[in-house]
Length: 174
Image (cartoon, rainbow, N blue to C red; front, side, top):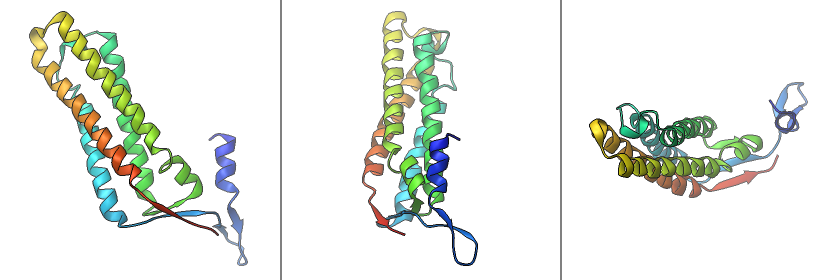
């Protein structure tokens, strides 16, 4: 763990009167129905993750040793995995996040989604270019499914971004 992040975690943990260590820093509390908000967020996240992985399950013309399709696709799968990781962090707080967790998850979630949007968009464009250059070939159905899955990932990312940006948080001082 980087030293700066460790210091952020430890700076607000202090000993109280009874001698136990407790967190005494800022807390961010979700404003609204956290349960309904998180269910919708998980719905978008699951759709993104399943479409990202599902796009590569069938052989597609561009996925057969074409680096300019494989690399962005692999980055899309990695970005989708990181979105799942962020959602786990966001859910684990149950509507209340410590300041360092808020900085890592709720505040910076959009950056991770933008990376997903860029990588899935590049995969869409690169597979389309490959299809125009080389045709459908014997794995045309897989190529069409890959394009559909990447479009679902892209649109799901846009929906998740809008959903995450709609979240409102109240700050509670110690």
